[in-house]
Length: 116
Image 1 (cartoon, rainbow, N blue to C red):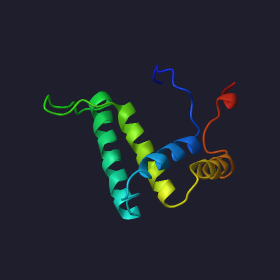
Image 2: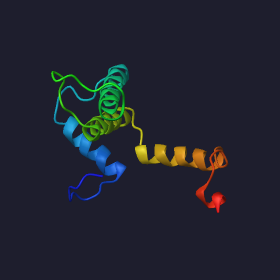
Image 3: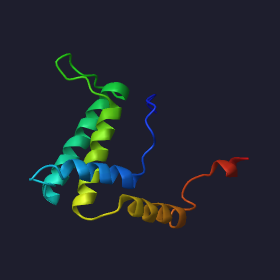
């Protein structure tokens, strides 16, 4: 985690902060298709950083220095835009996904407590 002493934010707070930012502009949110393209673009940029720092393809000197942290931040921003534009509460989406993992996939992985 980053060493900054910023207060923690909930997903709802992040979504509201992104909405306040986007609401300043007449254009508003991009269409779902444009947001999907932006999300794909950002995931590609994250892949480039991961490959640079942890993979077999370091960057050329001409390539911009970025960080995995910044790319993940970009993805969180676009994800928040996507959710906001479609009226999706990311906290609720997260709760539904965790419920799925805790029920359907409950016995899929070896629990640390099972190893004792």
